[in-house]
Image (cartoon, rainbow, N blue to C red):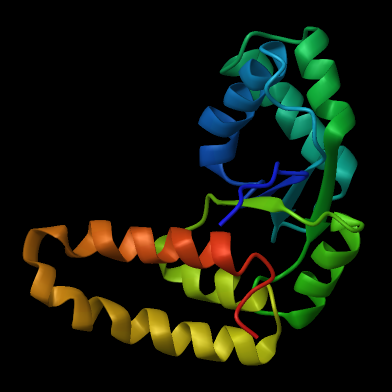
Length: 170
């Protein structure tokens, strides 16, 4: 499999605490090192606008990052936002529209593990959400044969499904 460069970063859970405390400061550091120069699309279910997300990012960088500098300004310029319920097909359609032709988006799931199947499956369609929920609900049971490595194997399968099926299951 050939590896193509990421042409967009999709951050599910952009309105959450993990994004505020850890992810936005990390993105600032990546920009400072010239390691991030693609659109950053935040996805959340908070009723926010992109301006409200930018305010949250500014607060994050002032509180947990290196303040407002050139890298922070660049990050704010790269940001867009899709608001909606991860279970709704309209949210995933809005995300596809926001990706604006990106062929190799990187998806970061800063959401509770219980939402992973919904998010991963929903990237394709409602049928993908249902199929994904079934697969990822029964998969941990089948992985019990791996004993203490069960969750590592589960995580690898989830990661590879995002890599191999960036647009979802269906």
